[in-house]
Amino acid sequence: MTAKPQTAALELRRAAEGAASALPPLLVAAEQLAATVQMGGHGRRRVGPGEEFWQYRPAHSGDEARRVDWRRSARSDQQFVREREWQLAQSVHLWVDDAASMRFSGAPEGARSRPTKGARARLLALALAVLMVRAGERVGLTGPLAPPRPGRAQLQTLAGLLSEDASAEDYGVPQVAGVAPYARVAMLSDFLGDLAPLEAALAALADRGVSGVMLQVLDPAEEEFPFHGRTIFESMGGSLSHETRKADDLRARYLARLAERRDRLEGLARAAGWQFATHHTGHPAQVPLLWLWAALERRRG
Image (tube, rainbow, N blue to C red; front, side, top):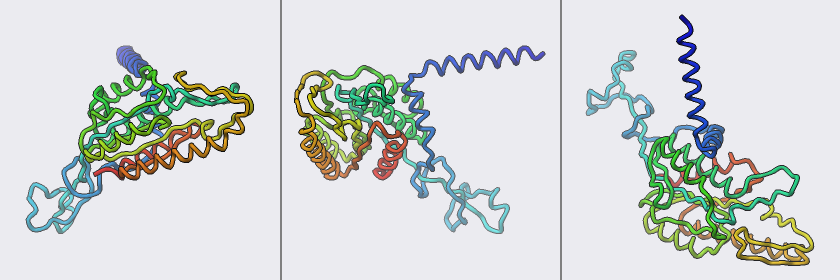
């Protein structure tokens, strides 16, 4: 008599394992990362239409009888109204730079490996999408391939698109044609290319009332410049190359240019009403994920 339930349980387990094995590896990693981030309710804390219970309050003159919670009121001498938290699903668009420069990882040979900039950016973007979808938001990409939608099926779509081969171009250009008016946008890139297209994209988004965040993802080697003696520097796409016999002499100028670029990026973000931060791939991913979430929450509404 126990064989059938055991067989059913075994079949269910096999089906579940098969379904899990079919998930894109990026989605599995993103959900694991999202699971490490603990946070409170997503809705804005004020009364309005929504599904989540917020609080009871004493009934006032003019309240409709259907709004009175009679079970709660039966425990008191007065009537109480059950209020719900006001929630509004909004569109969140993601732009993850897939250019060749994002394939860089400066981990020395034999050292503990660290992800490429692109791998970390994709993981953060999809983990952010997981959190947003769980909160009832619509999430998509900034381009036309994946308009914002709710639900787990959308996460599968995003994981597939973000897992595709990178662009052959050295540096990425934001695609913002598909961004809805008054939406929110998260851009993840190294922002090491020409800043004119980025400036134009931010201006176009500002005209549509779009708010957002920019996260610069860099490898620690790009911050530390740990190069000495004869060195050949090549872009990941192979279009740029520079050889020097004294890389040490370039360090001060390089770091000054990097600081200048970061100041420029912060200025562009500030002018657009956006927020800007930098993340290094040698650091844990939880911190930038929390920053992205909190920064987009401040841009909500």
